[in-house]
Image 1 (cartoon, rainbow, N blue to C red):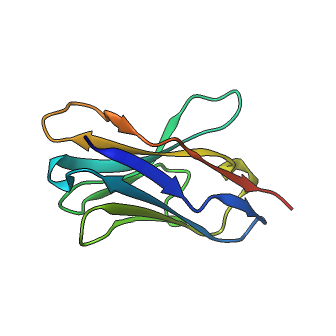
Image 2: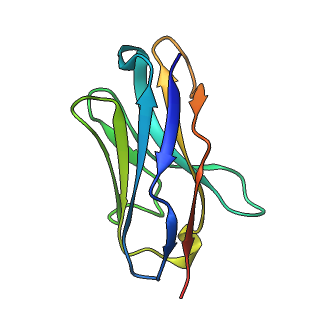
Length: 118
């Protein structure tokens, strides 16, 4: 059974940086693509960034050139480095994993709050 645990959220000033981590437990052999989603009040959950097992990445237009998703060589931790943060980046950030054989993300973390405010 694969479980995801996020860490590293918090309060940061506009223009600041923050890194969040997502650690997996259980067999990493069954995890394919991993991603970060976020949800702010009144909005739907949106994809922020994703990374395949082979290291191919995708980003939402709103975070390109500011956020970087990466995956540890051990494959059991995924990171999201966020630079030049804006108030509109505020929300709950969720880690997601697509297990091998699945057509969608089918494992989710509990979420970590990120607030960008002065």
